[in-house]
Amino acid sequence: MKGPRPEESIAPLEKQLAAGLDDREAVFRLAAAYRDAGRRVEAAELLARYLETDRVDWDACRGCVECYREAGRMEAAVEILNRYRSLYRDRAEFWLLRGLMLEEMGEWEAALAEHDVAVRIAPHMAEAHYRQGIVRMQLGQDEEALASFEATLRLRPRLIQALLNTGLIHEAAGRTREAVAIFEQVLEIDPQCADAHINLGALYGDLGRVEAALEHSQRAMQIDPHSTRAAFNAGLALLERDPDDAARYFRRAAEIDPENREAFHMLGVLAQRRAKWETAVGFFRKAAAGSRPHLESLLAIGVCCSKLDRPQDAADALQQLLELAPDHSKAWFYLGVSFDKLGEFEQAREAYRRADSVADTARDTGAP
Image (cartoon, rainbow, N blue to C red; front, side, top):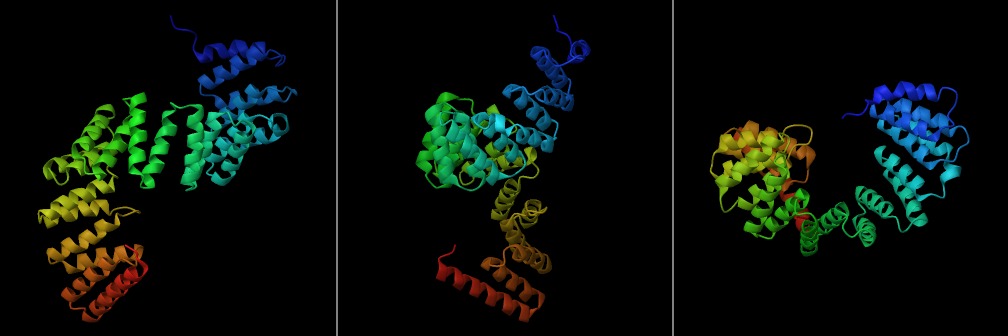
């Protein structure tokens, strides 16, 4: 039997509380009914009025902030936290909530400061360490974030998201063995964790363990059929062994996410390897579209258009690449080739000179 809809319980509660907000249980029930009905601002305002009666009630304060937050009224949420700071400044939850608010506002440095306070007040609180780690990752402080996640895991050893982030930090630092061990640990806890399978697919692919990479990527696709990363990783694993099957996975990744530039780039690479220059250009153009073009796709367009004897198209793509990466020596070289074909010999010489200069600088500095 279905219970009353939220709207049906609102009117009686409003009538009950019309004379005052002394009944805490009724206040919370009405706030919950407002919230369930999508009337979050009214829920927040009700709890704010309740707090104005000089009550020290952390649950009401937190609920008020959360309702304002859900309604997108961030300034009002922050104002509530500031107003009652003196009452709750000794609670780690207060600083944690402030930190979460600042995270949502993109104020990462300020958010970290709040989470640091929460950790100092309650070093036993796993969530405080965890949020500290999340913010440190956002700030690019990976090793510090790793320490935060390790502290989290000492308190909650089976917290999967903390384990996943630990694995990602090891992976980014090139500590492949440690990353693999962490992601395998996640699967011992939850064999259905798609993210762990996805990351293991990528790592085993980098290690040249094709079967393991393919197994984890396919398992991730079974768990999450819409995972573009799993499909892409499967394609990478098969790139050398079975290019046709690899192309099938790259196409799947691109169909799931038409903005997946890496998938289109790899489809272009496979077409380029088969000297299907026009097809390759089509894929590379998709990878190079938009405000964040795939730089190597722009280079590949230049190379393929040169093969197709379309030097102006090649020059256009290479010049676009050089606007974004002026120290790309290969782009300068192929631009020289394009200018030669266009009969622009002075510009060609200058492009070759720039290619040599950039390459010399790279050798001197040890840059790739």
